[in-house]
Every structure is written in structure tokens, then in C-alpha cells.
Length: 97
Image (cartoon, rainbow, N blue to C red; front, side):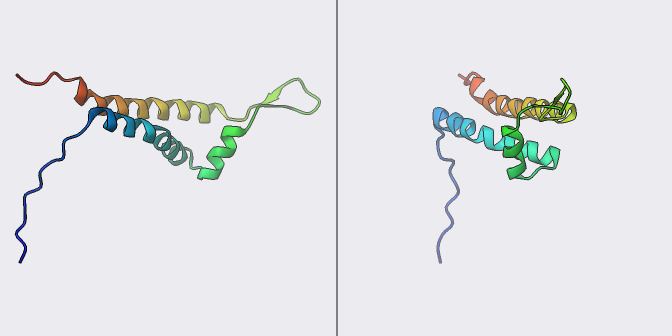
């Protein structure tokens, strides 16, 4: 019978931890946009490549993204940035003496 050893936390390298979260940022952003806009991942990338197009016989442009989509995308960006900032706040706290 094996004896259970209490789990000891592994020391975290701050730079490695922040880098890992930064690398995950675009993935988290994409997932959240897809969830909020009810898009699949292929739709996300299709929308990302889309350009505004001129309407036939008119000088108006057909936007690639609706105003509602633009607003939701910015709201998601703010939310994901805030999550990252909140997570990184742990490294801004001064250590206790």
C-alpha cells in the first residue's frame, strides 16, 4: 500500500506563467467571441477575413460585420483583457516582509 504524500505546490516562474497566459489570450478571445456571437470557429475566421463591399449600383458599402457584432466583439475584448489583468495582479502585489 502506497502512502499518500501531501501535494506541495510547484514554484511558479512568473515570466513563464505570464507568457503562457499571453499565448492563450487569442484562443480565449476567439472562444468567447464564438460563444457570444453563436459562431463556429470557421465562421470566426471567415468573418475575420471579410471586407466591407460596395453595394451594386450604389455608393454605399455593405459592412463585413454588423454594428451589433462590432459592439459584442469589443465587449468580449474588454472582458478578456480584464481577466488577464486581474490574473496578473497577483504579481503586482508586494511580498510580505
